[in-house]
Image: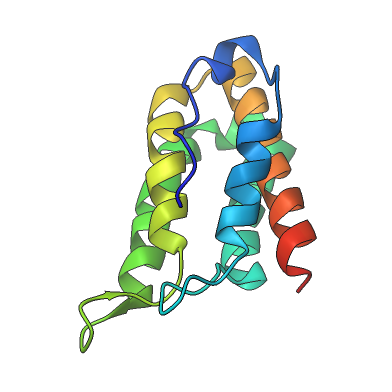
Length: 132
């Protein structure tokens, strides 16, 4: 079962409780029968890598934050199985949970820092669950 939405307020207040983030990481790291399958490590790391690249040089890269949603949307499209008319993995669920947060950041450094912490926690719990 899909976990509850991550509230946008986490971008201004920071992480106060990791339970929802843990649920998301574990949810994305487990296979649902018959589908969708777990999010692969390479899928989540590709998006997380783009986030970390912005973080490394925020002042010169902050205008790329707005491009994170299209990058995720592209990943969702690549994952779509036309024959079965659904996504093969949970990349769409990752997009659905991160999209509202990314849209809220704009170019605010504090919100972006808090977003990175949220995403980092999801990646860590995903790794814990699936181990690959």
